[in-house]
Image 1 (cartoon, helix red, strand yellow):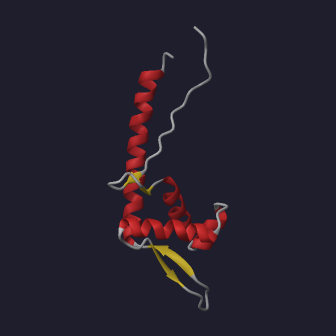
Image 2 (cartoon, one colour):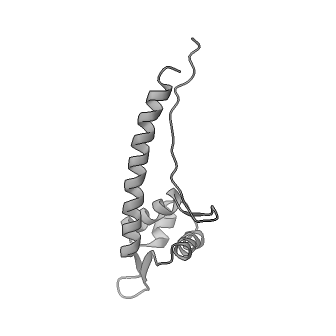
Image 3 (cartoon, helix red, strand yellow):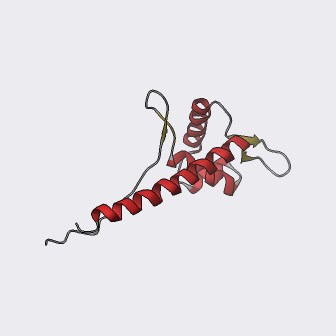
Length: 118
């Protein structure tokens, strides 16, 4: 049998609206995770090599599509500004991450079953 390079499976989970438009997925999730860690949209964008304006656009687009705020922001002040995830964003991110883990585990198991002899 001819041995091919090792194959692996990569599954991407995206939430779509009724018209098939992307509304939430790995990019928005990663950005929210960075905001949670860095407590700043600007710092999160910088850590991802993304322009702040693009990060804002991503957040605004997701908020409009989902119908609720994802970030609560504070501007300036003695300790500077910052951002935190809203309760809705925390719930959405937790549900997305849990589903992503479940889908990935299922897909990896099925991939091994189907492709182990190829």
